[in-house]
Image (tube, rainbow, N blue to C red; front, top):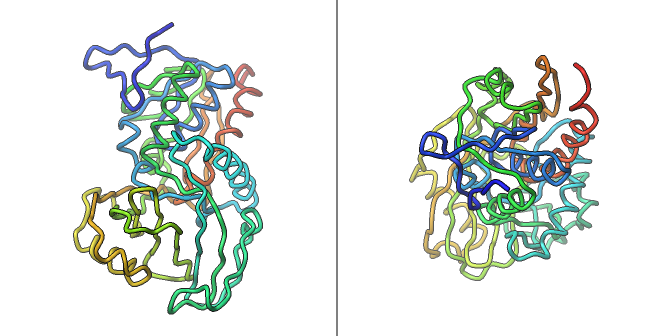
Length: 339
């Protein structure tokens, strides 16, 4: 059997590495790409992930993150993909190495609003007035997966290896170039699909967050006020708390902005005062791949089956397993069919 790289390490052909041949190549090592690759590999298909960045340097690694169907369309498919992913993440939360924990908390709004339709999936219940933070007039409490994304991506990379898959550092200029690599290509390139797939309907929305030492916070919080100019969320992990955030459309800058960081801390401390004195551990920046609709489609390029799986916006984690399994179903049904 071919020796595979350690989790999070990539074969680099430019520095003596040799690419492992595969029947299917997944482009991108974020949560969508790795989850898709895992599902393909565990279905018996030889898979290689080709990525310009190691998993720990992707937008997914910069995410908060928790299960939340965040502004994604089409709503009927998003509901199904989200439900399937919720089930998988809940099951995986029993394994400490995944970095997934089931955490209780609230989403709250400064204006009256109803509970989202997905609330029934997590047994959400409306908050009483006494259960709301100052300045908030509506909210719902529930329990859902909160994910330490760097740790979770390492878990997915190990699981891919265990299923016989591999990863290679490689940047594609065009999808035509990729289509010469395998009989199945899955494009999970995130915001880069704007260039790789020539899809001008996908754009980057810059998200910055701050990671601080956990001062004793055990519940999550998210400001879900419709029309709010800023994102405010607090996601606790065991030792740290992830604070967010920003949403700057069309901004591709990956360097943290100190002014943004201070404003994030200020907003979160207004909700949870203990955050004000917490030591800052790190700053993270990622580019959410926003599109009017998630693109989960396929097409034939001569004898190559090309599938697209991108445009999830801020719901990449939330939809990851549902989208990946649909990709596998299509591949198994069509990879040996004539175009």
